[in-house]
Image (cartoon, rainbow over all chains, first blue to last red; front, side, top):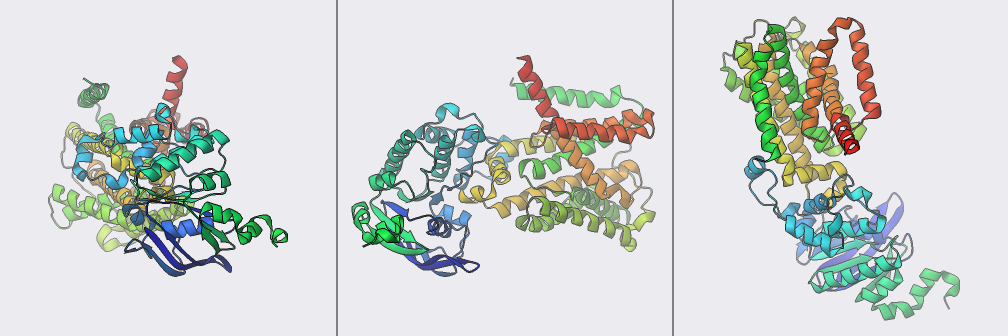
Length: 249
Length: 304
């Protein structure tokens, strides 16, 4: 298990966004986190990535305790993420966006920056990441000018620049057309094959059923079911949660 | 030779020739003032333009640099250069103090906090009479070089050095991190960027450079009064950065030059001067928010 959360909870005011959730993500797997709107998936992801700290529970990346560790420190441990509402550096070019992702790997002494400025390090690697998401031809354009679907792909390239071992994506298929979802699916599989564990929060069932090895279902901030995609599709509790109580028998 | 090199050599030659092309003592004085303003605009631009932190307290650091260096020289008999180093250090430390707010506050809230910081500093300069002489001021301050051309070369030389160092820095990975914080802090953190650390860095360096500019001001004017570091100065620096072009290297330099010479050239208009100045500023912000750099880019695009 690369990531292990035990009975973590988070409330906002009186609302229990995440309550007593335990989750264990196996290494080298593609792990999907699904559930109806408001199930607490994004909150859980924010807890895992360090944007929020949980009110209770424990959280480990392998042997490292993550509780109290701010988001930027978790990146150095090999955790990267994308956002449900795209958060690119809109005024910067595509290449600059990806280059910023190499921050934790920049280890030249400070004086070199003062004397030489741009060292050109990681430039090639950044370009190949842009190529990986199909954006190498637009590397000099401003990120804010990209169409929506490509913005999502750029965010993926930028996060990959941190060279994660655990890559968390928050609804990467939201707002994509069928062709773009297909492209995303292939890329996620490829990322998974390169030894990166992928944790994906998703609404798009096609994507989940096609790429995920394991699926974790949440409802009302609580765990509902965990299993293979096939098992999830046939679980009455899951069907009920998605379609509403009256269909449950 | 690359275009960058050519620009660099040409600007050095122009700077070297300037005090001889402009020989009247008054205008030579304005040249020194201009070089000082370039330093101030560069310092503020690092914080506002590149790191995106709305800082209205820059006049305080300018004042700290001026007062610390002058008091160390006049009251304690320090050597000017040693005093300058101490003054830059003091300004940098105070920059870190302001950064403590910047780590918690954003946008308008930071603007108000930093403005408050400038007001407090000004009040300290006015009221701590034992040390600063308050509004009576400190008189008879000597510049490090008495020849006006030499003083200009010194300040302009420092401005060029600071320009080159910041230019390198913002093109380096450090610049990527600062711009990332400017664009989206949450996103920057998700890439491992420690925003508190880098904000503190920008505030500290920006404050130190403003403090450095402050070291040369009292000797140039000959007297030191708190009013020179009124919060209005913060807005003047801001105007230089905006008129020139925020977040570009050359923009604030152009802005500082224009806003140093424009008020002087408008002196013939008497009281109308400030009105023309104000209207010009308003027009720039309304019609070219990216400043002169943006206007130049737009013009070049149209000519092609």
